[in-house]
Length: 272
Length: 319
Image (cartoon, rainbow over all chains, first blue to last red; front, side):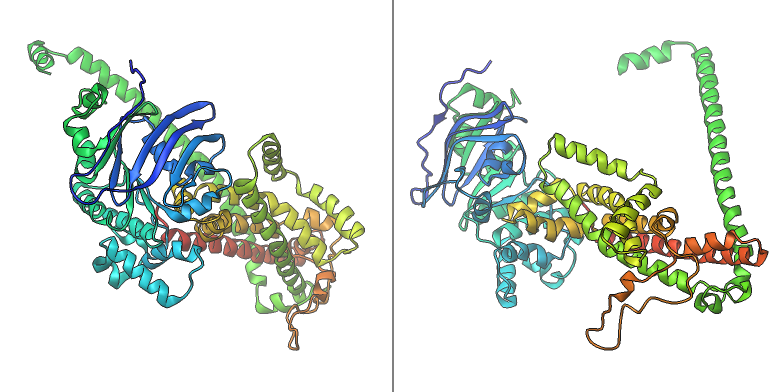
């Protein structure tokens, strides 16, 4: 049904602002679960201080792709990467055997589908990544926790209850706490895996607004099954299907003038 | 939708089918009531038997229970005999069991669950650990007699008994710990790893604290089983008549800890009970019942601890 010519990567330039530089880039990236080839030779840039959305029907490999960036697949047996993910400016291949996955995860943060705060206090949730990095000074931790909670737009709601258990927060607050937890360690790239699929519309709106604001601080890659969300929050969009990158380009172009028929069918809801 | 409604209204009556349907429901409900009654009967028989045994023990034992009973050594005269050496012996043996069995069990479980590669060797180990839980305790006693008492030269001591019972609870602790670790959802592990945690940081900072409730429950259930064990302790040669206490583990002079008690001879509550029951004098049998009450209270207290700890840990955790 699907022919497989090379994905058409648009020469993407945003309409406003300076020319974005590439933060990280997948080069000929394939990924295997056992003998099943889940990702097929993906080539895609991710621009610095931009939001890039991955869309596509269930099972198309968008989450699998996302989880390559912080080597989450290394936690499970029978998984194998081929190709490279280059992180710039130091041009290190994140997938190289010589690169420790822990080092990769120290540089790249992740926010999960379901809000998953630790069963600890709000403060300890945000401080955890810093503690793992050997930070123990109370003053420094206090500052970093406040900074991260402010960045995640949770400070006003949480400042008087930092010692409360994180589970006492609402679902949307918990997800913002998870964002704060990831932001506290100053990641170079922040991965979002369907961050609002477990949230109500109001909480979803607040997370989307937050993502748009956060791109000044951090480069964002987000998987979403919600096309409207991709259209609202992202600067670039990639459409994936059956483990292939079908089309990548500026979000406006993808949604208004997709180059490929398959993309258009998916976006207009004729398929997927 | 429309078509079915119009068909329903156009059909004159569905009474015949309705009657069949009702008869079917009624017969189904009769079976349900019968099964519920049968279940209730089974529960009642089981509970009544246990209650009868427990009440019998209480009626015989309660009149003998007093502070003196707890602070007296065994004696030739039934009314003066007490369980001091037995309950102290039980407590000390449990102490050894806990310090030996719990770290070993948790360590083994963490290794098997989190570090070991999943292959046929770990499968075999897993099956064997589960089977070990079903090995008769006297077999452990024989093993301990050869290994701890003679080979290692620990003698018929608190240490030998504690280690024997540690072996006995090891599979229980391992299985319970693995279950508890598995109950921590994968997204918690991923959350910790995603922040750059090493495997050990994830285990020590997250897995173990979150599964502490389940682990402690397993440990205490194991200990509650161990405290009532008689056969392996008799096998390694515990004495039945002890009129002295081992030296105290805590001393008033530095270094405040004393380990001489580990090699002391000892007896435990179930052995004291067994000894008293086998005497012809009826008065000693009452003593045995009283010792039984104490043993039961110790076991129930341990189980209560398990429930309380589980409650305390679970209160903080919602996935």
